[in-house]
Amino acid sequence: MRPRQATLTWVAGVVGAAALVAVGVRGLPAATSPAPVAREAAPAGTTPDGAARASADDALVLDPSLIRLFDYWLTTVGERPLAAITAQAGHDLDGRLGPHAARQAKDLFARYVQFKEALKAQHPAQPVGRSVDILREGLRRMLALRASYFSEAESQALFGPQDADASAALARMAVEQDPALDAAQRRQRLAELDARLPAEARAAREASLSVVHLEDAAQRIRADGGSEDDVYRMRAAATSPEAANRLAEVDRQEAAWKARIATYQAQRSEVLAAPGDEAAHAAAMGELRNRLFTADEQRRLAAYGG
Image (cartoon, rainbow, N blue to C red; front, side):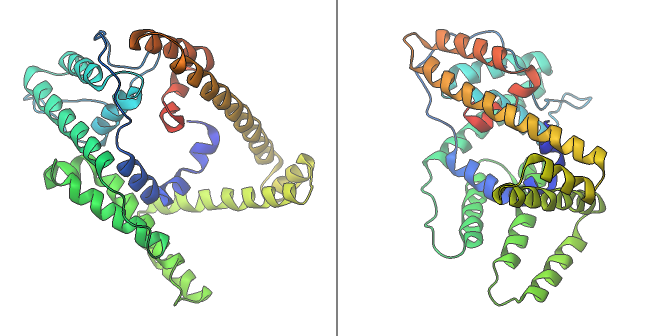
């Protein structure tokens, strides 16, 4: 995880509802034509995220890490045929789990893929009303569709924390967008919501918001024509010289990361547009990812188109 991502963990959670709905509506990218099945399910040069575990009696353990593993395998949809990814995932599950748990996991993966495909085909909710109302309706539709593929117990085990984050984010958005509340009432309602959070979540939120306020101040300085030295002095006064140095390093890393992502996206388009079959494209994409990113960094490429 890059430094700014670690610092803004709670802020990412605040927009979790929007992200959850957006991912749900998008579903899976369009599948390509069939290609030969390779031996490994993981995208070339990457370390699998998530986990598939079984109990002592070879029953599949259901938790969010299993969905992270499924999503990791699905990052190459669009570059490789879905049938090939599914076959490779099954091969990987056979290697990770005993026979009974592997069968359970493969059935779950098949249903997850069907769910994602159904989400892709689902017509989005009409954009009427406040953004929180639109997101709430999109989330309701997604959860209703998900119930067609997973039992209530399965959904709670696999998606429970994600659903809780989305609900908490929507609750905050509803307060922030309520026109009947004045500023004092809004602060009180938000404080009441914060008080319901677990202690760890409250601490993460407070730490993240302090960084957000510093970032807002830095952006205002830059917008007013201030220099990076001005930004540094503001940060050092608000925190400490050591913290200001760390934030300056984060800025440099962020700029370098954005430059690499821009290079990757441009070269990815060239690779996928070049002549060749799916196997050649997959090999070229693996080489490109390995050249530009470490194995840990490659886990995050799905957010930029895979």
